[in-house]
Amino acid sequence: MSTNILTIPYPDDLLLSLKKSPQEFEAEARVLLAVKLYEMDRVSTGVAARLAGMSRVAFMFELARFGLSPMGQEPGELAEDLANA
Image 1: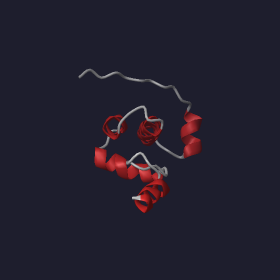
Image 2: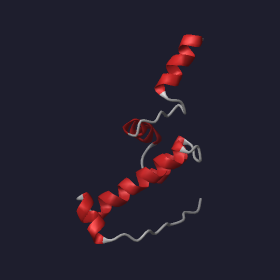
Image 3: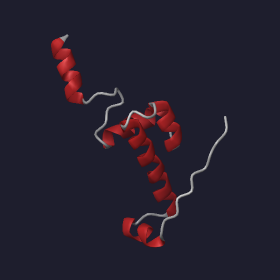
């Protein structure tokens, strides 16, 4: 499988305002991109996890931090489905 590289320039003052090292910021940016693509139903949890640089299980747990479900449904929707079952 081939790998492509995305380069995004950012100023040093961004790192200062976020109080992050370049490595921390870049890792967080990868996760944020992966989460957003998953949220938009553009990629699966597996593809998003690889983009984020983590295991699929870790990515699925990470989704909760953003209020997202790895099941593709919100918790309220799942509860409603169970009530109607």
